[in-house]
Image 1 (cartoon, rainbow, N blue to C red):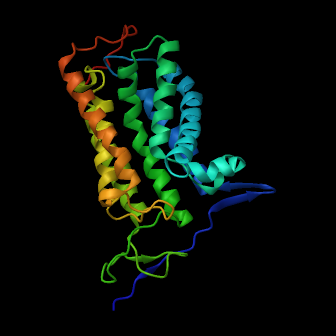
Image 2: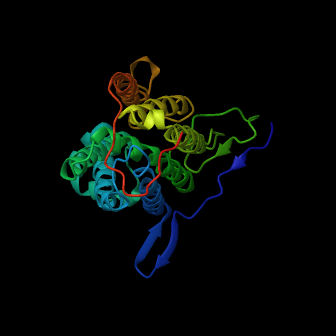
Image 3: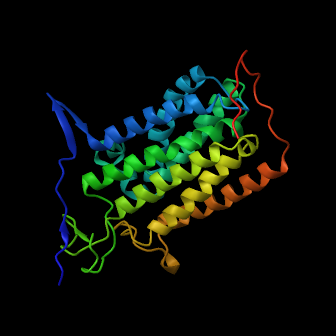
Length: 282
């Protein structure tokens, strides 16, 4: 039997500042949002222009609330509604984990729709630029899951070079599925989205990039679910699928519909360009 890797037992707390503990999990959210907004500042001014860097900065507060409220409520409603209804105060303990991407996505969509309405922006065009930055946060979040030693994978053959034994995981070698997700939902999806965002012909079709993101994430997440251990309190659903795969089905359908709709709609002219601006790229 070949040796397997032992989980390195990271401290989930990055640093203690007196009574305040800064956790890797929280840092991943903060860093993901900040880096995402920084990229969004550059994307919104590309032709056809959909906003200003200042509006991208203003979106920071909106997206933060959307991610936190939507992610937490999504986890409560999709995964453990019965438990949290009987322990409502535990809903506030987000530092212990328990965030749903699908819930966070719904929260961000609502925040984005309200933000676009308030600022008189084209919702789909703005969503196109925002979704390019989302995989940054997804990748960092999955790395934080790995550091926390949570959401580990299904049993793996001991001959797998990177099979790993996680704490509280029955002492059997498992797939480090958090890293699989970081590479697919994070790095790979970001490369695809960023490359697509460089094409003017796609940027002028409101909804295409957002649809590409929904489809890409749904496919990447569904694939990784084949290596990820289902939540113990849910297990497998009928047909052997997982809750994550089930929630990805409407995402993929919506993504394909958005891309098809974008192809049929007239090109978006964008907001008036500032004087002496030359932001059109091929």
